[in-house]
Amino acid sequence: MIKIDINCDLGEGVDNEALLMPLISSCNIACGGHAGNETIMREVVELAKKHDVKIGAHPSFPDQKNFGRKIMKMSPEGLHDSIYNQVQRLKIILDQQDLPLHHIKPHGALYNLAAIDEETATVIVDVLKRFEPHVLLYAPFQSVVSQIATNAGLKVRHEAFADRNYNTDLTLVSRTNPKALIQDSEQMFEQVYHIISEQKVTAIDGVEVKLKADTFCVHGDGKNVIKNLKDLILKLEQNSIGIF
Image (cartoon, rainbow, N blue to C red; front, side):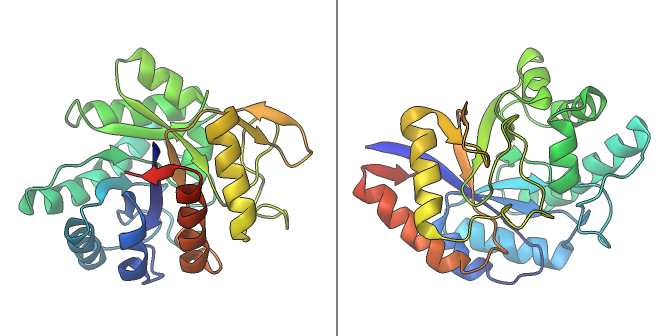
């Protein structure tokens, strides 16, 4: 049986973590940049501990007003300090619970910008270097940030999205496009299975593009996310693909 990681962005105010946690194998916890606070982080960490789910930090541009989905003009130093402080807030909670920080996954506009912008990517990699050597980076396949991290000797887990459509350059279709989101569990399965079995994804214009992934994200705020995630896992298991 092939085994994959399914990750989910949590602590973002949707308050469905108790339902999601038994279904996933790793989580990305908002650290106060775009959402979340210390109380929420502690609650999500406790749930992850209960269900033996790997815990990652989900830092973003410090912009709760826009949920971290707009690029902010920040100096490299200012961005570094913001990301580091967000991750460190979660790390303190994990240390108190004697739990490891498994990975860091940027959120929203920061994630998308780091995929194509060397300066932003370098800032994220510099932050990652300040934590234990085993901490992974969740990042897009063939992205600028994954390449810089790999060149720096850091460990990268390539991520693909089960519930988002792709452009041919492997960027995500803008949320302003009505076809940006995949909200049908059958379509989610088809995309994930195609990536696993063929290492390709069908872009929004029908072109097949090479895409390798070690972890698949399902957004916790997606429509019918619990039902869709259960359906996805069942379909994967029926095709000899398990979750680790």
